[in-house]
Image (cartoon, rainbow, N blue to C red):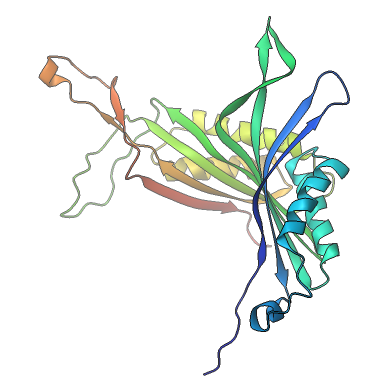
Length: 284
């Protein structure tokens, strides 16, 4: 039986690109982590050590910096499409370029009730994401977010689940529901999409649906969130979730002579339930 090279790709991971716009006294900042990769006919680099068709990963890094200046960063999606298109153009052997961008948000430091023109404070752990794959057929854009930590102090239960001889979990008819949400939504088109406005709108709809949906399980909440996004945005054809269940357990305060009617909890970081789901439109 012969041995052959399987699927492969190469690129530069996690280039830190900070773009500051200084054309007025009120500066703008976009803080990105950029990863690029190319896939295509690069077999000779593996089998023969022939690098003649390989655009160096160092060049990919340099292009990420150059395009932050040359093209600008109006949104992670727009920047990623431009960067991926340039890498594909520069590498004839490539069949596709994949650009992953994570944006780390900064807020203006408030001074006397107003955000300062050029002083910023890093926001919490939430990260805006995009993955763009550019091929000869055009770009496919998937936007998203990760580490969006949300919590409901009531309006959630978990009862009626399957039991066997190893089940010790009790029914919970009023529990804390919390997760650090990761969501990715794929666009069915890229024309006439306002990337920043759409991202803000999807995030807002996810949060509102989480807050207002009575949850009989985290699975039910994720489906409701995905359905709400698809119903509101016909330019999105699917949305995928990863949601670790951040468990909150009641602390036993009886040894101290205290009642605990759902008021004091211990937040357990691991192990945790991990719920994953994709909500999509039916195929025509």
